[in-house]
Image 1 (tube, rainbow, N blue to C red):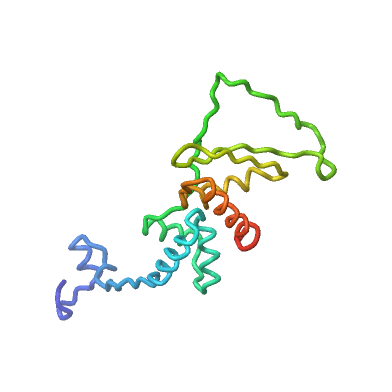
Image 2 (cartoon, rainbow, N blue to C red; image 1 turned 90 degrees about the vertical axis):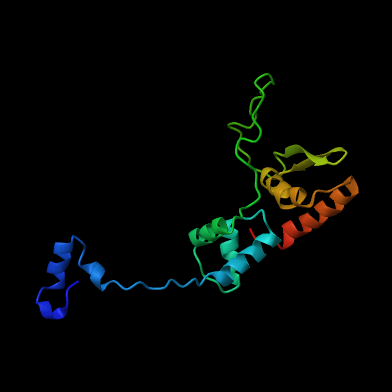
Length: 180
């Protein structure tokens, strides 16, 4: 750019040089990273419950006095290369050779307690085989969907005795202290 005494405006000089005149006035501002404390808190919360995602971590951060959005928490988790331990989509696809049974409750109105029960059988891999897990209750699917990633996969039980103790502790946590 020319000296001020030359009597040519900044705008005219920028047109002659082929640059935007606002770039003459631009001063770079140093970016501040105010999220270092939040990052440590996210890692701490994730270490306590790695099966929980950005929404849960955001709620826990708010309890600790950090008010950040779920999207920001998700971005920081991505930056920290951590994500919730959970099932992947399409993990189990039905075998076309197996018989498919009809849904017997279609059109049935459930109007009283104990009218309908649900069962769920699943297998937990142990080092020397499998343990069968059977549940008979009203709401089964959501409970067992959380048990494996939140407890079984993380702890890797070696024996059925360890599994029984671990699941008992997890159910006490699930029914008492676990946030919804």
